[in-house]
Image (tube, rainbow, N blue to C red):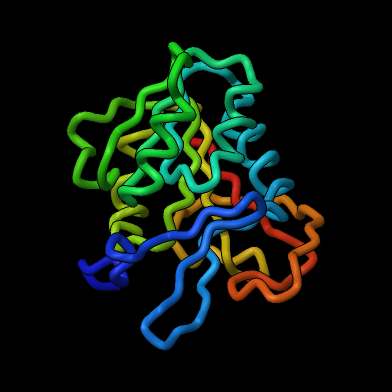
Length: 193
């Protein structure tokens, strides 16, 4: 991945009720997130919030995971978001939620201002910062804390190099025509520190 973040930050996103998308240089629609992901987001939020406490969410997207995280008994909810249009959506969503902090920009470039957390959910696949995840995640998670990430492989595959991970199978029903995940089983990664 390049530092250009696949030019993702320069893309003009289109927001619909059921998805976020943009058109690439070849005039092809690229889906960023879709509402069929709700079971994945719900399970991920439940896992990282199991012990309550302080939660870090990397990537706001459509706000699905954020809503699920807020439905749990937690102390604080920090959200890192990098895309300018989604930052605006996250800030609007956070208005009036006293336990939510929005950190704008890359989680990795903001790592010095971040704390340690009881639960961390990473879903920021369009950014080059993924290359730092396996070497940096332990500095963000408290001892005993939980971490999961969006796994876009069709198996229990530790492609990010997070040692000691297990996987929970979740049934999903991807919308036909989505161009990023077409499997009926999602393998949710689970790592406890």
